[in-house]
Length: 181
Image (cartoon, rainbow, N blue to C red):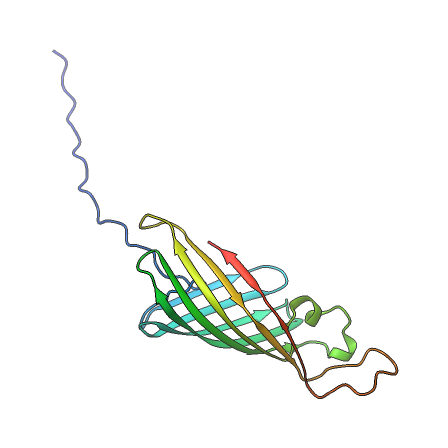
């Protein structure tokens, strides 16, 4: 008779995975006292972001964008979770404002930081953010962020010789869309 090998007992099951429901880029608030931070490296900008939950559905947002030193832009904002569809989806309103500092003046720049980033001296970005989470406690969250970017240029220039004096303030708008998971 062959000796039997001792059977190793299986470890007890651990706690179930904690659902991952909040995101720095999504619509759901991080909750009172909650904090989310993130860094994104890309082109044209490098961004650092933070969200601090101040109310059950409201977050304060702070961030800093840079176009590799040619433009530096601190920003502040708010995110409000307007519709909470339970664990699967949410819809939020967001508002951010910023002031961009440029390394070169607008009169010496042709296709520089203003052209690449779309930013001007003052920027306002109201918008909608939607989040949808696939089934499962650790499933990915999909998000869509659509904003209206109002850029206010306080140092406009006139490029044509007989164009006259430019106004003191020029505004422009664009619609940036960000999708991700």
